[in-house]
Length: 186
Length: 121
Image (tube, rainbow over all chains, first blue to last red; front, side, top):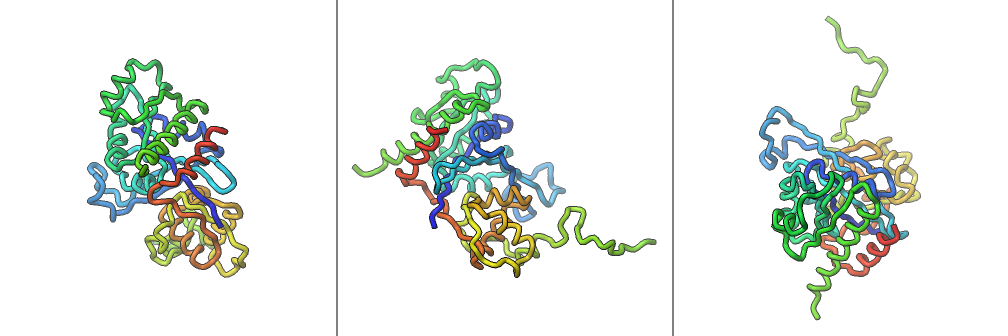
């Protein structure tokens, strides 16, 4: 019996268009699954301001694309709040890589995601979401602000537009493949 | 003073009478640690009459291959619980399990087919 799942993570700050991107390419309307955090996670998470709470629900949105009769690609949007890092670990483990969505009005909201994938050596591409209007910055300015490694691809996208989201996904898979080829012994 | 009396309804306000931790026997993690939220499972042709209804629901959902995350979403179960319940069903032979997610994707052939699949979108 062989049925393979492949994962791609869609990350970025709150409101950068993660679920919109997933919806534009998924063959099913995005689904939401929930994880319940209990007191056991206190001390790991920053719970400042919610000390009275003993459980919290983290929602994960995801979609699927059937690649072939035995391979299905799952696209997982990361939970927006940065105190849910442990969920990122589960999402990122074994993933092809990540698309980090960038909203140029709030570049800083994408810093944590860039930092996370960089530190763990997980392939990622940055996708600047143009949905929010004309971008006032050049590619160089955005790269500079995010301190992107020159090898990290940057694509312009509109997360509502299927061909545009598809381009971001294709760019990521090619990038992941080139990293493997580069590492392979001659 | 009034006392709570059984009104004949076994469903709590949350729609569930049996607490989830009872259903999974207090287990908090799947025994098969490779089972992740994207792992797909499928129902095997086994009689499910001896299973608890909550488990039967999962088996019924898996007539076609389905991921742990999808089962959780469709049945409104938290992920950790879904994972443990699916693990129990796999262990007891009710569900077949697909390839676990790799620690690190290093299979160029697999990435090639993903790329081809995406380009067909």
